[in-house]
Image (tube, rainbow, N blue to C red; front, side):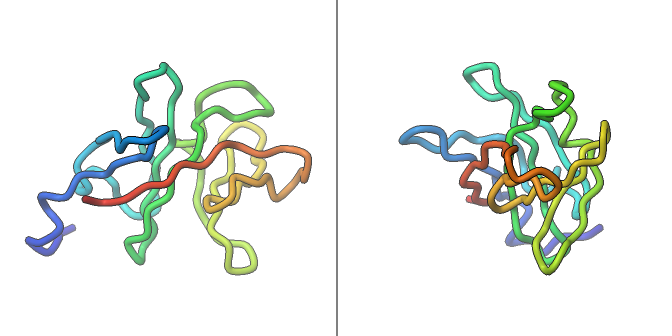
Length: 116
C-alpha cells in the first residue's frame, strides 16, 4: 500500500483527559485491521482505520470474556455503522459509540482519535 507523501509523517493520537497521547505512525494502521496500543495508565486501546481513512479507537478489552482482544476482531458495517466483532464470542461493538450491537446492556469505552 502506498500512501500520499502528505500522510506519511502523521501520528495517530488519542485524547486522554486534557491532553493528546501519541500512539503510532498513521502508516501502521492498515485499513480493515486493528492495532493494540498500551496507554500510560496500563489500559489498552484498539485502533482501527477504515477503507475511507477514518480512524476509530475503543477499549481493547472484551467485556464478555475479559481478554484484551478487540484489536484482533473482524471489522465490518451493520446498517451503515462500523463495528468490530470480538474474536472470542463474536459480539459486535460499534466503533463510534462503543455500544454492543448484540447486547444493549454492554458497551466499551471510546476515545477521540486524530491523525496529526
